[in-house]
Length: 361
Image 1: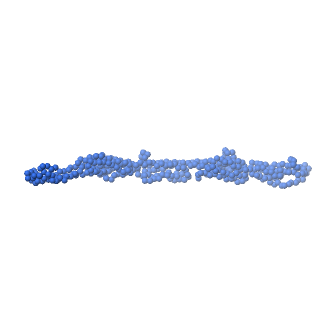
Image 2: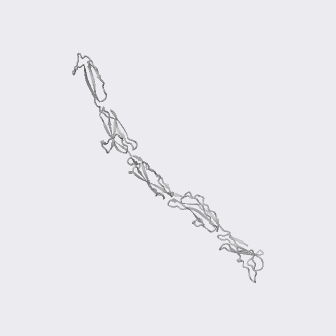
């Protein structure tokens, strides 16, 4: 600063490291002089030297999880800083300003960049964690008779291999999922390895008969009626079971007259459960027969002690039919035709297992 002896005629000053000039001029050069020079002015200089630097905020790095990116913080007392990165297994020659992206262990080196302060550095270890992947879920399927698959599909994170072509029958099947990038991804189940095997099942289907079983009754000797029924699936074949007592059933279609029970049935297999309907009843009615070969009148000449054989009148219309006879004369029942007169013979075909009775006169 100025004094009584001299004034500061040059002092531009500075803030960065360096040497800066200063000029002083005597107020009374007639009576005073500088010891180093006879000139009224003298040139001096001063130097700004580098300051000691320090980290105001300690350097730190967060590697986070793969895909999130690396973040870091630091604050130097003087100036900015740069961050260099290398793998933890590397050396100083590997440092780069490019932040790593893959999962792994790394070292970050913080370097202050101020030219006015001494350089300070700090190395910080950090890790980029693998990103966890949840195992996909696979649901069971119901048997259809066709080849079925797990329904899983791969992508950039994992690939899928299904046991295609085998998955038809009801059973358990494997599907494997493999991480496509095990460097940066891991399964969230906590186990090591890149491959996981999942199991899904083709479970047995169920066939249900609808409540529409039907059959028409018919008469003995006619063709049997064909039953009908439907089911809710294309699986299996409907079979029809017949019974005369409602207990014992078979596939044999009855032929004799009577009342019968009918069930529809789909047999189960290893791949699907079958079903059986409630029984319904139907009837095979007895047929209406007739007496054949009966003439309107007969005549006979009797010899003494002779009789007319009326049991020769008529024949049954079916094999095995039994005929009975009744004879009247003048409205009265007689047991034989032995004398002159008019007789009425009634021929009756008696009722049997499959036929009604029938009479003719």
